[in-house]
Length: 273
Image 1 (spheres, rainbow, N blue to C red):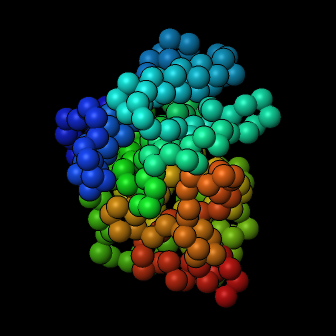
Image 2: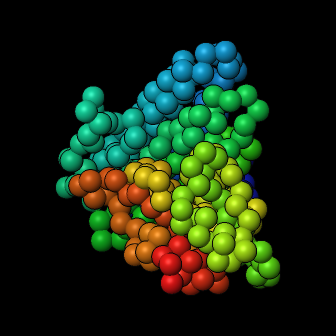
Image 3: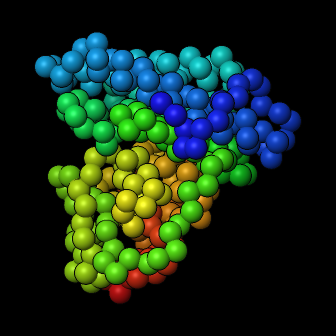
């Protein structure tokens, strides 16, 4: 797996200031996401696709253990918010709320797609939140596509505005807001897998927007949003409000990522204006 574009990942303790630490943190995020992605590909090969439940479970747990181990070794003072850190009641710990640095991670975004042979629209998310700064470093690995996108690389918005916007949506549950945008803007809806794959499709220019309103958590969007924002793409709640992370309740149910020049018409369409 390679970065887009490539560079050697850096490891080691963060430097004294957030500004100085950012390059090292971004490189670590990319190394973590790519490493977990390589492990997930190996698990796919090891277990095959005959038992999808076993493959999903093994992928989730082993990728999570890999990421937790790397963070503990390389950033021992940092806290973690991970999808796989929930207890039996579905709750996540609150110790992170007192931390100045929190890694927000989804070890396997798109378990359904991961367990389907031939699909490549699943991802690994790794983001760093810092108190007073928000999301400061992140990477999204698309392991089956062999690419990792990261906040310290530029993915500029294409200059030409689309005549017919392409909007990434859920494969099974396109939200009413996306259907409203389809009707109002003459858009084309593009079904796709994981949230990370959808946002990275926007950043790569494969689609022009991603509209989601079916319920998500912070780990579903933190890393993809950070990568998008770092290159100047629009990313907000579907009502235009800012996305906030490391909250006591990590539920963050809706998301709009798009070209900046589409933000106003899309926000109007999805909110009935």
